[in-house]
Amino acid sequence: MKEMLENYMNYKAEIKTKEYKIKELELEEISVGSSNLSVNGDIKPKGYILTGTEKKIINNADKIGKLKKEIEELQAKINMIDGLLDTLNSFNKRLLELRYKHNLSLESIAGECGRSVKSIQRTLMNCIKKLDKKCGTIGE
Image (cartoon, rainbow, N blue to C red; front, side):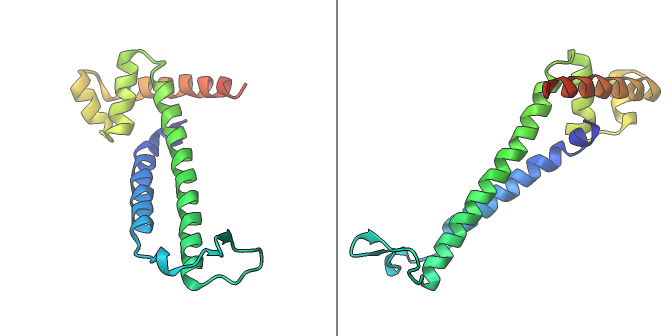
């Protein structure tokens, strides 16, 4: 669970990067009009030799499909983390968000919350243990 929390912002950044890559692939100038994807209005038969443009279109479509699947997987992780955080009381949820979503140091969090660094560290560890237990029951 701790590793997933630590990677939370990386998941979000990966999604943005993959969305940008999809846009790039969609915007590539490929002249579909010059590519004859059919023969006499029918889809080309199996074994028909594809042109370079057709291969590029198919390759890009495959890449886009793969990127969308990867985005779904990353979003599922984010949704799971958010859902688990929602099960905590507001103070504990806020501590975890400050630490892992906003990447604040223990000292900064302690100062903001008016508590000692040791207290914040202990609370964070206890929260992660609680979330680990909840994660274990999700698969059951």
